[in-house]
Amino acid sequence: MLLIKKARLIDPESETDRIADILTDGEIIGLIRENIDEKALSEYAERSGSPECSPEDITVIDARGLICAPGLVDTHSHFRDPGFPHKEDITSGSLAAAKGGYTTIVMMANTNPPIDNETILRDVLERGRKEPVHIYSAANVTKGMSGREVSDLEELAAAGALVFTDDGRPVLDGDILEQALVRASALGIPVSLHEEDPRYICENGINGAGNDASLSNEGTAAAYFGLKGSARTAEISMIERDLNIAVKTGAALLIQHISTAEGVDLVRKAKRLNPLIAAEATPHHFSLTEEAVKRKGSLAKVNPPIRTERDRQAIIEGLCDGTIGIIATDHAPHAAFEKEMPLVKAPSGMTGLETSLSLGIKNLVQPGYLSMKEYLRCLTSAPAKYYKLPAGSAAEGSRADLVLFDPEAQWTVTENFASRSSNSPFIGETLPGVVRYTIADGKIIYSGI
Image (cartoon, rainbow, N blue to C red; front, side, top):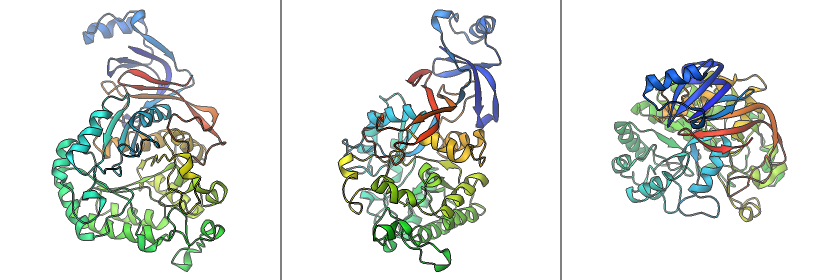
């Protein structure tokens, strides 16, 4: 048993924000009270049928000054397994998750081989069950991520697929996407899409000039490097088409890592017609602008690219008004030698699990855009609800997955990541919010005291 004393308990699901003691009993939260003393422990043991709660059976955590929240939920992580273990594998990704306060992870399916069949899906899920964090997996919406034929979604659903996606590639054929949405909808499983039309992309991961002169977007990062880059139309056109199909079918569709102001507005309007439409934002898209690419080069190269301050503010506005309900890391580790290649050849993506919580505190909570409870909702109950996960709650009877962090303490990002890779543009920055404990199934899986 764990007894967490005098934490500021923030549970967005139950709208709780108060100082409390929390007792875990095995894999569940057994008791939450203003004060859990020996009498309360004895009464709980009698009422629950648990063995007598003696001091030697209980680990006490002094949580004064700490926030206790549901364990964080990331519904968009790349653990590179199978196929690219030099970047990350399920074990190293789990260690990174625990260090960042995450207890539930949904792995993306753009692996090698891709997760487009029952055999591969069952293998990664079986290996994931050996890790201290709760591991789920996406499966490919089309076979081989080719966009030409819908995968056997029914077989994949039976094997445990949580979401269908070809993340990393768009589904270019609208008829194929419509077929997939109809079949996924019948299974009660969402489709999650990477929205970039390659026809508008020259050098992906770099923000290029906008196709609409009224946007006044000259693509300063692309110009700085003498490149054409990725036009914002690449994202906008795909989002518009796919939202129309989702409205037509009434299916659950999530727009991944949204990066444009126009994309946010399209989602805002479409959600009024189909409430099963959702969108996610990444910490790097609400924290950085394309100026970071000039400073950090390939470390800030991502798909879709980091864009302008106008886009960053639109993403924040979307988080504030509920257009964007989920914050997902898009944790995308790459080896140092890969990111050291010339900018055009270097792969896109950055690690995110270990910096995510802090970036939101710095760029959303401290400036006053979101309250701490509103912010934590985007990291816990909102993704858990959308993906129907047994997570995201810190109430009595819930799974004992918790994060305890000091919102005032600061830390400096170094290359000393738990992840196998350290491709982060935030190295050298001092950020607020230090994870002190991550708890999964009632067990301490990370301690940063």
